Image: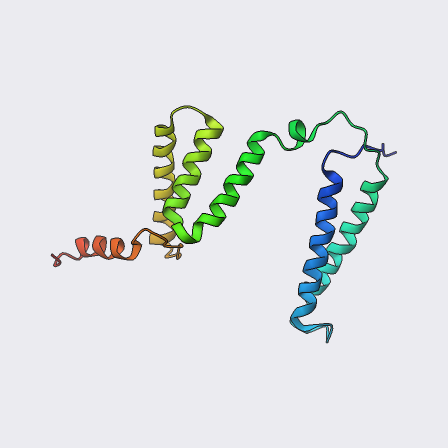
Length: 171
């Protein structure tokens, strides 16, 4: 026997957003190649998003049937301030990544979040962030040669200078 739980704060809005987002993705998938054939390029995205729409609609229907009475509060139990700050920091990171580049954006993001979430010294958060970003950069950019958004740091010149140091014949 299943007990009927009340609707949590924000649940209805979230489920409605999921259905609307799924409908948008279904429309986008239809735009790939229409409904021509099962082997068409858009067939898999079309089927996947159609399943998303159906599942989202069923979940929304169940959510609408729940009572809205609960002791939970959105700002206390669902989205407390640290969660909101983290979401805003991720949004700021995404917006700043292309113009500033990977290195400064990641450093600022990590320094800000470590400083905010852990508290304590901002200098310590900056040192930790510097070490983390340096390690990530070393592994992904130097070892695996993954291209990172360069932004304001003259990355190519710095790498060329470091390589010239190890070449043995440069001035």
